[in-house]
Image (cartoon, rainbow over all chains, first blue to last red; front, side):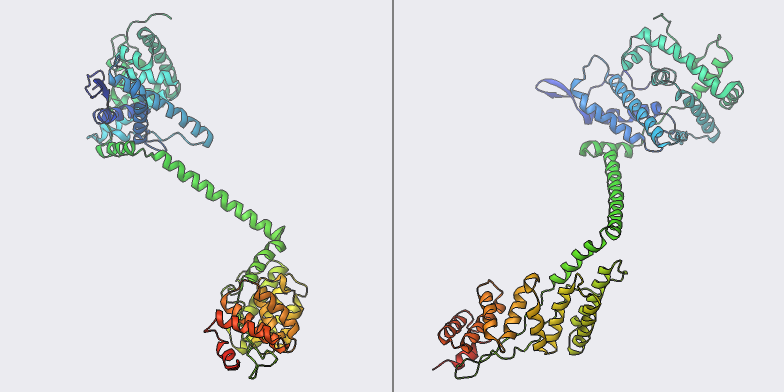
Length: 205
Length: 309
């Protein structure tokens, strides 16, 4: 994880007390937050009614509201990640309802954020891997999905995940183990051995 | 809750992994890392944060407006349907009557002063050429087909008034014919009063004063929007041979607050009728008042010319 846990110094002085400034936080962290947003939303997330810009704005609106309550007990980036998770999950929930009410099809999965990958074949394989993984993740509960994304894709340490999700670290490992089991079941249910093998072969090259 | 040792990500894989684990390991390892939003996108968001603007709010507003427009259009369509099918007659009555009453032509009939010496003489021949009642307030007949008897009546009246509006005696004749046919066809119709007022206008244009006078005398002018104007015309017409009747109208008018052109005619008409009836003192008082109020009025030269030197 590139910037998670990094020490940040974005403070202004107000009456002798350090005050975080939204603009400085945005300047410093908006790029990485936009990556988290895309990671948490998954491929195809920028299609339809939701796009990364909207989500990024929502995240920083929450940051603006909660800035006064930020305590430096956690790294700023961890705090930001927590907010990003909340915002993305809330939006996913809303979108699920919207799709239910309006019978909208699930947005077609597309790896829009990796269009710049140089080799087309590699790009396709990575896109296929992403499609397979997220199609199964999207069938899990939000908690399992988030845990697996943070650990398996973002490679965050357990302690960091614990802070972000408000759990103890041992609980993170327990929950993660269970989430993996459910993921495997769902994967086999969706694709079976042959499809999974096919998908994996693509990825193997 | 049972305790579990820290795990390592699937993508790292281990020797003990099952075939499915290995497949998943390859899959997770192949999932690409997302790229950040482009600079310009993040600048757009920064701007929205700074200004407090929200694309979501904008979209919501657009949606609300669209829903409002759709509801409004549906409501208007339903109201129109209901107006035609349920309340057609009454609805159109209100609209058409408003249009007719809105026509306020300026007055033209005007009495002339008796010749010297000042004697009680008839207020003579108001050279009547009323400008037409249906000027701007009467557009050409609507192209849409009338949907009820009242619609037909209104269309018929509008056609006649259009001819009257065109001006000239020939058009007034055509208008008069059309109005008389209209009054026969729609006898007792909702717009009868308006048609009769228009007929007076047409008769005055054609110089048929006696008929105009008869029509005006029979009209309940209190119920017409142009009542002051019609009262003045009636008074001036009556002054030809019935100054007592005319005087009561002039009296009402002089006591009212009228446009200057009408007030001038009412004051002069009352003076002329008083003179004709032998009330020379009151007549002279009216003329003096006239000269005071309208020293450059249209009747001032006549009054001055006939006053004793």
